[in-house]
Image (tube, one colour):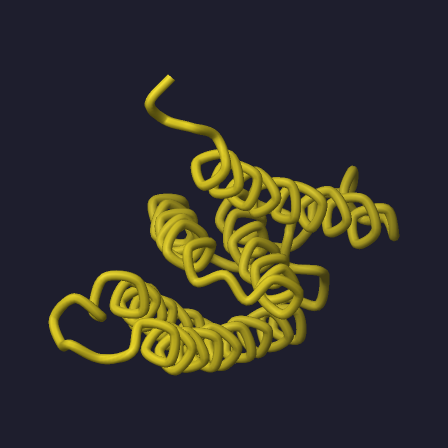
Length: 172
């Protein structure tokens, strides 16, 4: 079960990478071909969103299978917390994308989620039993809500930064 969860995370990582490329094509690829810019961005943005959603489902499957294999919420070490943080960022991005349909946010958010998940790989990924101090229901409640909040704030920062760059006159 632990090997399956690891494989699911790898698949999600590569799907996120593909989604990043697709979002970049949605912004910069319209210059390669003389096509309608709006329909090009809409089509490629939708494919980026679909890939991001599929990657999120694979990472959610990783989280669930890891929880089953470990017997506790997989947020008890830095590897598990960081991968959950990356998943929270993608979840927040999916919500923001559904509201605003902005491909620019995908160009920023997906690579950052990839970097966070790749950074998690530097930590030991072994499943270990919980130490007595962590054997509480508060582990599930506190750590998951904290990571989810941090992921939402990270994507909100990216969305705010994109908004400022688009609206503030850069010549002043």
